[in-house]
Image 1 (spheres, rainbow, N blue to C red):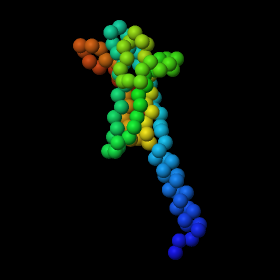
Image 2: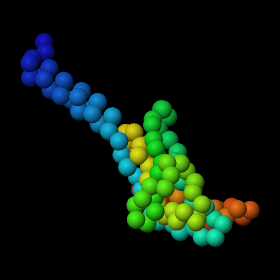
Image 3: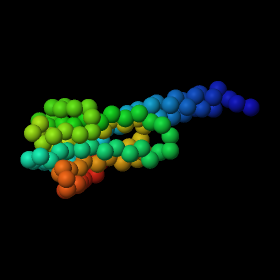
Image 4: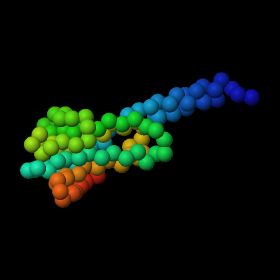
Length: 112
């Protein structure tokens, strides 16, 4: 037989799980500085096995959002990638990359 105390506990536990699953987590990369014709790319991979939402922003060293996309040219002075992801950050792998046209990747770091 379910007592009022057990029912209350079960309802609270359910609400906590729902709230935890619905929260957003923010990840940032360390700074990288592209120059010349290079560009800064931000990459995000969902490794959870389920569909989760996410957004990507490229920021200047002052924290100004340049774009809400994954790639910005060096002359816009990008420095960081910001990823806002649904749920637990362990479900995502983010990285920042400086890419040189005609050459490829010249440096990369992971988000935390």
